[in-house]
Image 1 (spheres, rainbow, N blue to C red):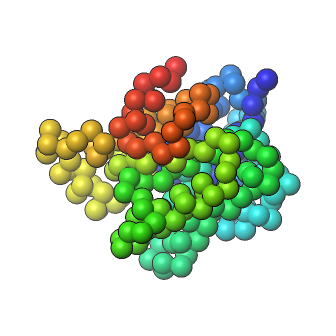
Image 2: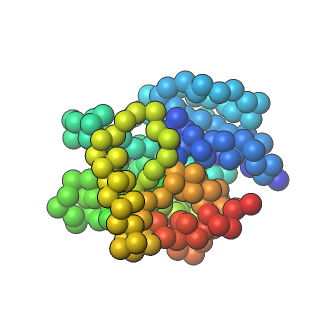
Length: 218
């Protein structure tokens, strides 16, 4: 049977690649996009819901699918307020996982980050770790936490810190272990689609394994 997918964060770098892949994928009959900003593309498969993602639970009746992909995330530059940052990077994925459990959705695949650890003293790593912990607490049958290293691709906005990190990784790439090398957003998207097709026994998928899974995508 053809499947229905939900994407959160479809207007972002990874999410936009994921949306393209799902629209091309004959396994999917419908792609529900819950988004704060209206999409710039249209397609017969797309069912668009322009909403306040911080109030995702208000749309529980529309939140039905076979698989949910969460690519939501912000940056310190975009969101300097830590409470709002937490509401986005922690609150949205955890609420989505709760809705998956409530609505008997058996697959939830979310983009986290390498280094995520709930006990970390670093705000970003701790936030991602707490998100992972509370997503896993929902005990969804097939949950995958994607832990990419530095995500690269053609972004709409300029990120100075990211550009500097990319430069360093390019120059000293031969010294960097595979797990910590830069990773293309499209590679993450391919791995997410592949995991939806063939769930892994592992719930945490670090960057090097994301690349490996992406090579299986056809």
